[in-house]
Image 1 (cartoon, protein in one colour):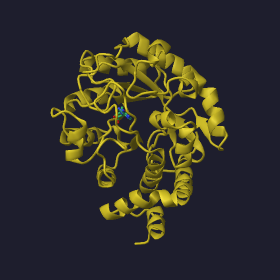
Image 2: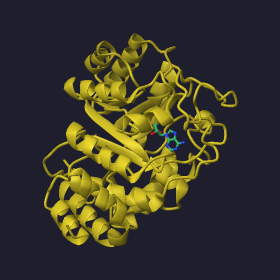
Image 3: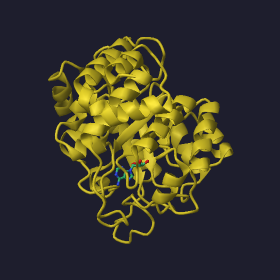
Length: 352
Ligand code: 5AD
Protein backbone atom coordinates (compact mmCIF):
# COMPACT_ATOMS: atom_id res chain seq x y z
CA UNK A 1 0.00 0.00 0.00
CA UNK A 2 1.06 3.56 -0.66
CA UNK A 3 2.68 5.03 2.49
CA UNK A 4 0.51 8.17 2.52
CA UNK A 5 -2.56 5.95 2.40
CA UNK A 6 -1.15 3.75 5.15
CA UNK A 7 -0.71 6.82 7.36
CA UNK A 8 -4.37 7.72 6.71
CA UNK A 9 -5.38 4.22 7.75
CA UNK A 10 -3.23 4.42 10.86
CA UNK A 11 -5.01 7.67 11.66
CA UNK A 12 -8.36 5.82 11.44
CA UNK A 13 -7.41 3.54 14.33
CA UNK A 14 -6.16 0.77 12.14
CA UNK A 15 -3.87 -1.79 13.77
CA UNK A 16 -0.64 -2.41 11.88
CA UNK A 17 0.54 -5.67 10.40
CA UNK A 18 4.25 -6.26 10.75
CA UNK A 19 4.93 -5.42 7.13
CA UNK A 20 2.93 -2.19 7.43
CA UNK A 21 4.88 -1.29 10.57
CA UNK A 22 8.12 -1.95 8.72
CA UNK A 23 7.06 0.27 5.86
CA UNK A 24 6.21 3.14 8.23
CA UNK A 25 9.49 2.77 10.10
CA UNK A 26 11.45 2.80 6.85
CA UNK A 27 9.55 5.55 5.10
CA UNK A 28 7.97 7.53 7.93
CA UNK A 29 10.67 10.22 7.93
CA UNK A 30 9.67 11.23 4.39
CA UNK A 31 6.17 11.90 5.69
CA UNK A 32 7.14 13.24 9.07
CA UNK A 33 5.28 16.54 8.86
CA UNK A 34 2.05 14.70 8.12
CA UNK A 35 2.72 12.14 10.87
CA UNK A 36 3.54 14.80 13.46
CA UNK A 37 0.45 16.86 12.61
CA UNK A 38 -1.85 13.85 12.87
CA UNK A 39 -0.19 12.63 16.08
CA UNK A 40 -0.43 16.05 17.69
CA UNK A 41 -4.10 16.22 16.78
CA UNK A 42 -4.69 12.74 18.23
CA UNK A 43 -2.92 13.72 21.47
CA UNK A 44 -5.05 16.85 21.71
CA UNK A 45 -8.23 14.84 21.22
CA UNK A 46 -7.23 12.69 24.20
CA UNK A 47 -5.58 15.24 26.49
CA UNK A 48 -6.39 18.69 25.18
CA UNK A 49 -3.33 20.91 25.26
CA UNK A 50 -2.36 19.59 28.68
CA UNK A 51 0.99 18.08 29.58
CA UNK A 52 1.33 15.80 32.59
CA UNK A 53 4.49 16.00 34.68
CA UNK A 54 6.02 13.28 36.84
CA UNK A 55 8.61 13.93 39.53
CA UNK A 56 11.40 11.46 38.91
CA UNK A 57 13.24 10.31 42.04
CA UNK A 58 16.31 8.26 41.14
CA UNK A 59 16.78 6.73 44.56
CA UNK A 60 19.58 4.23 43.96
CA UNK A 61 22.14 3.74 41.22
CA UNK A 62 23.32 0.39 42.57
CA UNK A 63 22.35 -2.37 40.17
CA UNK A 64 22.83 -6.12 40.19
CA UNK A 65 22.50 -6.22 36.40
CA UNK A 66 25.13 -5.72 33.77
CA UNK A 67 23.27 -4.47 30.69
CA UNK A 68 25.81 -3.64 28.00
CA UNK A 69 24.33 -0.23 27.25
CA UNK A 70 23.81 1.17 30.73
CA UNK A 71 26.17 3.42 32.68
CA UNK A 72 25.05 2.10 36.07
CA UNK A 73 25.72 -1.56 35.18
CA UNK A 74 27.37 -3.44 38.01
CA UNK A 75 30.71 -3.78 36.19
CA UNK A 76 31.16 -0.04 35.92
CA UNK A 77 33.66 0.54 38.71
CA UNK A 78 33.81 4.24 37.88
CA UNK A 79 30.20 4.92 38.78
CA UNK A 80 29.88 6.88 42.04
CA UNK A 81 27.19 4.87 43.79
CA UNK A 82 24.52 6.23 46.12
CA UNK A 83 21.31 5.26 47.82
CA UNK A 84 18.61 7.50 49.24
CA UNK A 85 17.03 6.73 52.58
CA UNK A 86 13.32 6.56 53.04
CA UNK A 87 13.37 10.02 54.67
CA UNK A 88 15.35 11.49 51.79
CA UNK A 89 12.81 10.06 49.35
CA UNK A 90 9.94 11.48 51.39
CA UNK A 91 11.68 14.85 51.43
CA UNK A 92 11.87 14.77 47.60
CA UNK A 93 8.14 14.11 47.50
CA UNK A 94 7.42 16.98 49.88
CA UNK A 95 9.43 19.36 47.74
CA UNK A 96 7.83 17.99 44.59
CA UNK A 97 4.33 18.30 45.97
CA UNK A 98 4.91 21.99 46.70
CA UNK A 99 6.05 22.45 43.11
CA UNK A 100 2.81 20.92 41.80
CA UNK A 101 3.81 17.31 41.13
CA UNK A 102 1.04 14.76 41.71
CA UNK A 103 2.92 11.70 40.46
CA UNK A 104 6.19 10.48 41.92
CA UNK A 105 8.28 7.99 40.02
CA UNK A 106 10.67 5.95 42.14
CA UNK A 107 13.30 4.75 39.73
CA UNK A 108 16.44 2.83 40.49
CA UNK A 109 18.81 0.10 39.53
CA UNK A 110 17.89 -3.43 40.62
CA UNK A 111 19.15 -2.96 44.15
CA UNK A 112 18.12 -5.75 46.50
CA UNK A 113 19.44 -3.81 49.49
CA UNK A 114 15.89 -2.51 49.50
CA UNK A 115 13.77 -5.55 50.30
CA UNK A 116 10.26 -5.95 49.00
CA UNK A 117 9.02 -4.83 52.40
CA UNK A 118 11.30 -1.76 52.42
CA UNK A 119 9.85 -0.58 49.12
CA UNK A 120 6.32 -1.34 50.30
CA UNK A 121 6.92 0.76 53.42
CA UNK A 122 8.21 3.66 51.32
CA UNK A 123 5.18 3.47 49.01
CA UNK A 124 2.83 3.38 52.00
CA UNK A 125 4.50 6.41 53.56
CA UNK A 126 4.27 8.42 50.34
CA UNK A 127 0.62 7.52 49.88
CA UNK A 128 -0.12 8.41 53.48
CA UNK A 129 1.53 11.82 53.22
CA UNK A 130 0.19 12.53 49.73
CA UNK A 131 -3.10 10.65 49.32
CA UNK A 132 -3.93 12.63 46.18
CA UNK A 133 -0.75 11.53 44.40
CA UNK A 134 0.10 8.56 42.22
CA UNK A 135 3.20 6.47 42.84
CA UNK A 136 5.01 4.87 39.94
CA UNK A 137 7.71 2.29 40.50
CA UNK A 138 10.52 1.63 38.03
CA UNK A 139 12.86 -0.82 39.69
CA UNK A 140 13.07 -3.74 37.37
CA UNK A 141 12.13 -7.39 37.43
CA UNK A 142 10.73 -8.93 40.61
CA UNK A 143 8.45 -11.82 41.48
CA UNK A 144 4.69 -11.69 41.13
CA UNK A 145 4.44 -11.80 44.94
CA UNK A 146 6.62 -8.73 45.31
CA UNK A 147 4.76 -6.82 42.60
CA UNK A 148 1.54 -7.76 44.38
CA UNK A 149 2.90 -6.58 47.74
CA UNK A 150 3.79 -3.20 46.24
CA UNK A 151 0.42 -2.89 44.53
CA UNK A 152 -1.31 -3.55 47.84
CA UNK A 153 0.93 -0.97 49.47
CA UNK A 154 -0.58 1.56 47.08
CA UNK A 155 1.67 1.69 44.00
CA UNK A 156 -0.36 2.76 40.98
CA UNK A 157 1.92 2.35 38.01
CA UNK A 158 5.05 0.46 36.96
CA UNK A 159 7.57 1.28 34.27
CA UNK A 160 9.57 -1.58 32.85
CA UNK A 161 10.79 -1.13 29.32
CA UNK A 162 10.80 -4.33 27.33
CA UNK A 163 13.97 -2.88 25.66
CA UNK A 164 13.52 -4.96 22.49
CA UNK A 165 10.86 -7.54 21.72
CA UNK A 166 13.17 -9.73 19.64
CA UNK A 167 14.75 -12.46 21.76
CA UNK A 168 17.99 -12.56 19.75
CA UNK A 169 18.39 -8.81 19.81
CA UNK A 170 17.68 -8.81 23.55
CA UNK A 171 20.55 -11.26 23.99
CA UNK A 172 22.91 -8.88 22.17
CA UNK A 173 22.13 -6.11 24.66
CA UNK A 174 22.10 -8.11 27.88
CA UNK A 175 24.12 -10.83 29.61
CA UNK A 176 22.74 -14.36 29.52
CA UNK A 177 21.14 -14.21 32.96
CA UNK A 178 18.58 -11.72 31.64
CA UNK A 179 15.92 -12.77 29.17
CA UNK A 180 13.34 -11.09 27.01
CA UNK A 181 10.89 -13.82 27.99
CA UNK A 182 11.11 -12.96 31.66
CA UNK A 183 10.94 -9.23 30.98
CA UNK A 184 7.81 -9.64 28.89
CA UNK A 185 6.20 -11.94 31.40
CA UNK A 186 6.80 -9.35 34.16
CA UNK A 187 4.90 -6.83 32.04
CA UNK A 188 1.90 -9.12 31.64
CA UNK A 189 1.97 -9.81 35.39
CA UNK A 190 2.05 -6.10 36.20
CA UNK A 191 -0.95 -5.44 33.98
CA UNK A 192 -2.83 -8.36 35.43
CA UNK A 193 -2.19 -7.10 38.98
CA UNK A 194 -3.91 -3.85 38.07
CA UNK A 195 -0.93 -1.57 37.59
CA UNK A 196 -0.94 0.96 34.81
CA UNK A 197 2.03 -0.61 33.10
CA UNK A 198 4.66 1.00 30.93
CA UNK A 199 6.78 -0.79 28.34
CA UNK A 200 9.20 0.73 25.86
CA UNK A 201 12.47 0.52 24.03
CA UNK A 202 15.54 2.42 22.94
CA UNK A 203 15.70 3.70 19.39
CA UNK A 204 18.97 2.95 17.62
CA UNK A 205 20.34 0.55 20.19
CA UNK A 206 23.30 -1.46 18.86
CA UNK A 207 22.41 -4.14 16.29
CA UNK A 208 18.81 -2.91 16.09
CA UNK A 209 17.16 -3.40 12.71
CA UNK A 210 13.98 -1.85 11.31
CA UNK A 211 12.48 -5.28 11.68
CA UNK A 212 13.27 -5.27 15.40
CA UNK A 213 11.39 -1.99 15.72
CA UNK A 214 8.45 -3.45 13.79
CA UNK A 215 8.46 -6.33 16.27
CA UNK A 216 8.45 -3.79 19.11
CA UNK A 217 5.28 -2.28 17.66
CA UNK A 218 3.74 -5.75 17.28
CA UNK A 219 4.60 -6.55 20.90
CA UNK A 220 3.05 -3.29 22.10
CA UNK A 221 -0.12 -4.00 20.12
CA UNK A 222 -0.33 -7.31 21.91
CA UNK A 223 0.52 -6.07 25.43
CA UNK A 224 -1.47 -2.83 25.17
CA UNK A 225 0.36 -1.00 27.96
CA UNK A 226 -0.99 2.21 29.46
CA UNK A 227 2.39 3.96 29.13
CA UNK A 228 5.18 3.71 26.55
CA UNK A 229 8.67 5.13 27.09
CA UNK A 230 11.01 5.43 24.15
CA UNK A 231 14.19 7.41 23.67
CA UNK A 232 17.30 7.29 21.54
CA UNK A 233 20.18 5.08 22.61
CA UNK A 234 23.10 7.23 23.80
CA UNK A 235 26.50 5.64 24.41
CA UNK A 236 28.10 5.75 27.85
CA UNK A 237 31.90 5.90 27.93
CA UNK A 238 32.28 3.18 30.60
CA UNK A 239 30.22 0.49 28.86
CA UNK A 240 30.93 -2.11 26.16
CA UNK A 241 28.88 0.05 23.77
CA UNK A 242 30.99 3.16 24.26
CA UNK A 243 31.93 3.41 20.58
CA UNK A 244 28.47 2.72 19.21
CA UNK A 245 26.64 5.59 17.53
CA UNK A 246 23.69 7.26 19.23
CA UNK A 247 20.18 6.65 17.95
CA UNK A 248 18.44 9.07 15.64
CA UNK A 249 16.31 11.88 17.04
CA UNK A 250 14.26 11.96 13.85
CA UNK A 251 13.46 8.26 13.97
CA UNK A 252 12.55 8.59 17.66
CA UNK A 253 10.11 11.38 16.79
CA UNK A 254 8.63 9.38 13.91
CA UNK A 255 8.13 6.43 16.26
CA UNK A 256 6.52 8.66 18.90
CA UNK A 257 4.04 9.82 16.26
CA UNK A 258 3.30 6.26 15.11
CA UNK A 259 2.80 5.20 18.75
CA UNK A 260 0.44 8.11 19.40
CA UNK A 261 -1.66 7.18 16.36
CA UNK A 262 -1.68 3.49 17.30
CA UNK A 263 -2.51 4.21 20.95
CA UNK A 264 -4.43 7.51 21.15
CA UNK A 265 -4.80 7.40 24.96
CA UNK A 266 -1.40 6.04 25.95
CA UNK A 267 0.74 8.08 28.35
CA UNK A 268 3.75 8.92 26.20
CA UNK A 269 6.68 10.89 27.62
CA UNK A 270 9.11 13.10 25.78
CA UNK A 271 12.08 11.48 27.49
CA UNK A 272 15.25 12.88 29.00
CA UNK A 273 17.30 10.96 26.42
CA UNK A 274 15.50 12.83 23.66
CA UNK A 275 16.17 16.14 25.43
CA UNK A 276 19.80 15.16 25.92
CA UNK A 277 20.53 14.44 22.26
CA UNK A 278 18.83 17.51 20.93
CA UNK A 279 18.20 20.97 22.38
CA UNK A 280 14.46 21.46 22.63
CA UNK A 281 14.00 17.72 22.18
CA UNK A 282 11.14 17.57 24.64
CA UNK A 283 9.19 20.22 22.78
CA UNK A 284 9.78 18.29 19.56
CA UNK A 285 8.50 15.21 21.36
CA UNK A 286 5.27 17.00 22.26
CA UNK A 287 4.93 18.13 18.66
CA UNK A 288 5.23 14.47 17.67
CA UNK A 289 2.44 13.40 20.02
CA UNK A 290 4.03 13.01 23.48
CA UNK A 291 1.98 14.23 26.47
CA UNK A 292 4.20 13.59 29.51
CA UNK A 293 7.43 15.12 30.84
CA UNK A 294 9.41 13.67 33.73
CA UNK A 295 11.65 16.27 35.39
CA UNK A 296 14.26 15.20 37.90
CA UNK A 297 13.29 15.51 41.57
CA UNK A 298 16.31 13.72 43.05
CA UNK A 299 18.40 15.66 45.58
CA UNK A 300 20.89 18.01 43.92
CA UNK A 301 23.94 16.20 45.29
CA UNK A 302 23.12 12.88 43.59
CA UNK A 303 21.66 14.16 40.35
CA UNK A 304 24.93 14.04 38.49
CA UNK A 305 25.42 10.40 39.48
CA UNK A 306 22.48 8.66 37.87
CA UNK A 307 24.25 8.47 34.56
CA UNK A 308 22.73 5.87 32.29
CA UNK A 309 24.42 7.52 29.31
CA UNK A 310 26.84 10.36 28.59
CA UNK A 311 25.77 14.00 28.98
CA UNK A 312 22.48 13.06 30.61
CA UNK A 313 20.58 16.25 31.34
CA UNK A 314 20.05 16.94 35.01
CA UNK A 315 19.87 20.67 35.34
CA UNK A 316 18.23 23.58 33.56
CA UNK A 317 14.68 22.88 32.50
CA UNK A 318 15.29 19.19 33.18
CA UNK A 319 15.27 19.84 36.92
CA UNK A 320 12.03 19.87 38.84
CA UNK A 321 12.74 23.24 40.46
CA UNK A 322 12.88 24.73 37.01
CA UNK A 323 9.23 23.91 36.42
CA UNK A 324 8.68 27.57 35.61
CA UNK A 325 11.17 27.30 32.77
CA UNK A 326 9.48 24.16 31.55
CA UNK A 327 6.08 25.84 31.73
CA UNK A 328 7.40 28.63 29.53
CA UNK A 329 8.90 26.16 27.11
CA UNK A 330 5.64 24.31 26.60
CA UNK A 331 3.60 27.54 26.67
CA UNK A 332 5.73 28.59 23.71
CA UNK A 333 4.06 25.87 21.64
CA UNK A 334 0.59 26.45 23.09
CA UNK A 335 0.53 23.76 25.80
CA UNK A 336 0.19 23.91 29.55
CA UNK A 337 1.57 21.83 32.37
CA UNK A 338 -1.11 20.66 34.75
CA UNK A 339 -0.90 19.64 38.41
CA UNK A 340 -2.84 16.39 38.16
CA UNK A 341 -2.16 12.71 38.68
CA UNK A 342 -2.65 12.14 34.99
CA UNK A 343 -3.87 8.55 35.12
CA UNK A 344 -4.53 6.46 32.05
CA UNK A 345 -8.09 6.78 30.82
CA UNK A 346 -9.80 6.03 27.54
CA UNK A 347 -12.07 9.03 27.94
CA UNK A 348 -11.03 12.42 26.71
CA UNK A 349 -9.16 14.09 29.53
CA UNK A 350 -10.47 17.38 30.83
CA UNK A 351 -9.10 19.13 33.86
CA UNK A 352 -11.10 18.85 37.07
N1 5AD B 1 20.92 5.22 26.26
C1 5AD B 1 19.59 5.45 26.26
N2 5AD B 1 18.75 4.88 27.14
C2 5AD B 1 19.28 4.08 28.07
N3 5AD B 1 18.70 3.38 29.06
C3 5AD B 1 19.67 2.72 29.74
N4 5AD B 1 20.87 2.99 29.21
C4 5AD B 1 20.65 3.82 28.16
C5 5AD B 1 21.48 4.42 27.20
N5 5AD B 1 22.81 4.21 27.19
C6 5AD B 1 17.25 3.29 29.22
C7 5AD B 1 16.79 1.84 29.18
C8 5AD B 1 16.18 1.65 30.56
C9 5AD B 1 15.83 3.06 30.97
C10 5AD B 1 15.72 3.27 32.44
O1 5AD B 1 16.88 3.83 30.44
O2 5AD B 1 15.80 1.66 28.17
O3 5AD B 1 15.04 0.83 30.56
